[in-house]
Amino acid sequence: MTLQALTVATDIRGRLAGSVIAALTLASIGSAVFTLPAAAAKAPAESVTDSVRSGPFGSAHAGKAPATRARTADPAVAPRALPACDSTFSQINALNPGAVYNTVANNGLAAISPTDVWAVGAYGDTNFGPDKTLAMRWNGSGWSQVPTNNTGPSNDDIWGVATVPGAAAANDNVWTAGDYTDGSDIEHVEAALWATPGMWAYKHPTNISGGNNVLLGVTAITATNVWAVGYYRVSNGDPNAMPPVPPSPAQTLIGHWDGANFTTAAGPQVSGTSSDRLVSVSASGPNDVWAVGRSSDGGFINNLILHYNGTTWSITPSPNVGLGATNTLYSVKALSPTLAYAVGNHIDVSTGLSDTLIEKWDGVSWGVVASPNPIAGDDNYLFSVSALSSTSIWAGGAS
Image 1 (cartoon, rainbow, N blue to C red):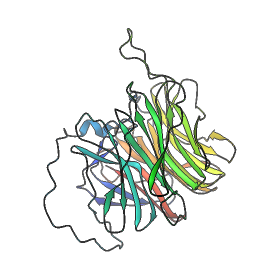
Image 2 (image 1 turned 90 degrees about the horizontal axis):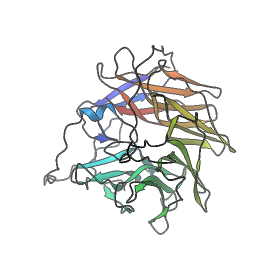
Image 3 (image 1 turned 90 degrees about the vertical axis):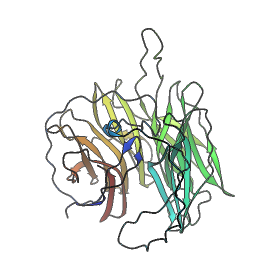
Image 4 (image 1 turned 180 degrees about the vertical axis):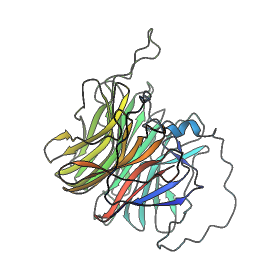
């Protein structure tokens, strides 16, 4: 079986973690052989601050984005009739509470049922923020905004949402993961459970060390076994000192809910000097949990994959396309102990542009799967992966 791609729209524009989306690409994943190119140039330094305007990772698209202006009021038109649920994609009107920007996060969509779907992210009223948390809920006929806290005086973001598999109702079965920024510009973990009788129960574990603590992805195995991943820093540094003090490297952060307490702990690091971030997490069961992201060291960025076997988290080797090239994994989907997929991007050393990246776990090792680049001569990314079965896997991204 080969990988097939469908470019759904070439005229879609929007914000996705600080990027301009020029196309939405969906791919049905099979298996194939991929040729690895030669080395690439070093990647730029990462940003200390996370917001929907900068993203948890820098993006080449950010420099291409036009200046944003305030939105005018939505035109007074009759609502469109809902399209039939069939084999084609259809645009559905959503809410835009922000005057300037409204963003659904990369990990920001999950469903209880066809009539109970959740979307999360952030919105803002000026080009300079601050970000405000955004949660929306689909009831089968329309989207409504779900009230959320904005705990800090600066940026508040929801980066991920997950639902408990097999849950019949949302109460006690929907989790979000994100962060809020305090008055000293330090980010703190904020997780939330949609609890009975229909309100958020917020979890604020104490920060590890004195720098940023952020959760970017979340997955639920059961109502009493939920994992979240992200990163923390020992220190954010001091840009106003003479000479300026740089931030400490990012280190992997693991969050867990056991039915009674939500706690965070440091995860494994690639090295003592690497800057490591986890962005997405997925599980096929309590003894098979995968988390993906990236590791930066010496100016080079490589894929990062962690696995939890029911007892401990450990780093699992994964291939990088191009010796010394920039490789990043944004999303992972675990289907069984012998099957998982991760998607992201790598820099093509021959063009300097971003190409899509898909990797597959076969129960023994991770390998690269061939993937298309819909728009030649432009950057191509895959940001998310999901699956209905072992033979129906989909990935979405942008060009």
